[in-house]
Image (cartoon, rainbow, N blue to C red):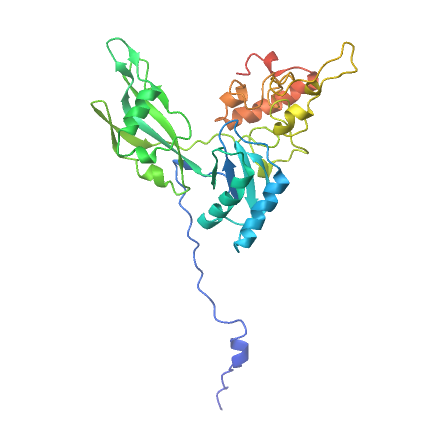
Length: 340
């Protein structure tokens, strides 16, 4: 009896699905414990410094920058823009390169007042480092404490100074009540890869006659403050507020338009007696109103309890729930003695 012939699949059937590819493992990006990622890089910041941002025609700025990018055959385009970060934020279609930034810088310059200093670039990340075993007293006999200025002077005299781009003032924290040494916590502007921090971590820094080492500190960027609704815990991209708010009075207008939008500044000539409008060189008479704690100060005031607890998201979330209850009863946050 003949053996059964083996069944051979057609070649077309074998190759229909194609050869199986080996699964490639996606390399995970190493997350640095001492660097907090900054805002999205799909934006370009035009910054002027605290309180120096000019009131520009946003539509004209948008058209001028896009026209310059198109003329230079750049791949990036500005989708939208608005006031943010002591200047303007230009949301882009992709991450701008160095050439794109030069084009934007050149397009912005003719629109600015003569002599006004400005900076154009991508948002940066923040790295957190600490200097250990720093003398807490510059004069132990007379109990004269070391100052921030002395810390900065020691850093400036070090070869590591170029990596210390201060994002905030250094903070000196004594190790204990009986200790004569302290830790100095420093936040520095950095790249997402933590390049500046890597260049100073585990390096010695001479402080007087003592050699102190720079160590990595745990990254704690704190809760973000939304530049649209001026509430803590999210950024503009994640804001769900139905409309923007003023940081000064919580009114439904931009902070830059506060003096023109609030009623007290306009005055009322029909009132008895008539109320004249406030002069441009005079402070706005409209009382401040915080959108977070409901007290009489701007949302950006550092005296606000929310500002003091910006590194404690749980506290912020709990107090927002408490504020909602207070608002329903017509109270203010100061009615609760435990708010601070």
